[in-house]
Length: 163
Picture 1 (cartoon, one colour):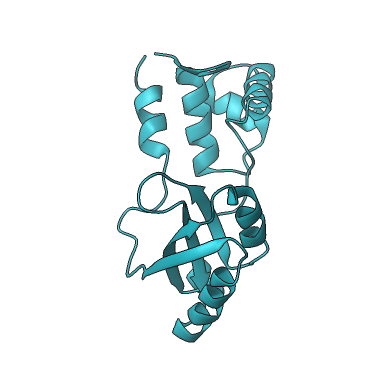
Picture 2: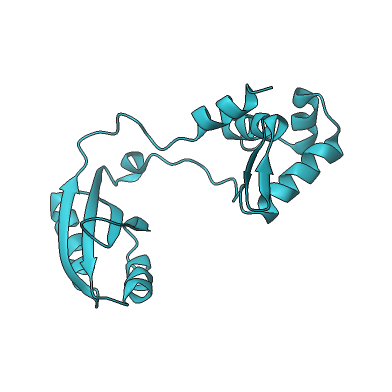
């Protein structure tokens, strides 16, 4: 099975390579090729192609934000003035505690994930978000737990097993 979107495509070998790198992001290309049973050049070419097409965007470490002092996660739905999405997103990106911003449909224009050290700190972050020029209204919810963390593994496993 090959998954295609525009010029990008993933086959079973790509999926197996991505699973390997998900488990061990610091694994050298030569070791990847050994474990996958293909030539080093094949692995390098596939990684280069996936980077070039934006499928593979890097190898950042996965951080436990609570362990570094940001134990509170909140989500805000923002209603913004028409035509201000770019400007608002740029201003939000200047707030360190804003981790993600998604443009959405439905009852709001932007969906924001933010972190804070405490409830008082969250109030400070929300005050900064509300002060962004173009933000008309916000609705914030605090995450109590994360029963399903961000993941792509099941999608890659399905693709890798489709041989």
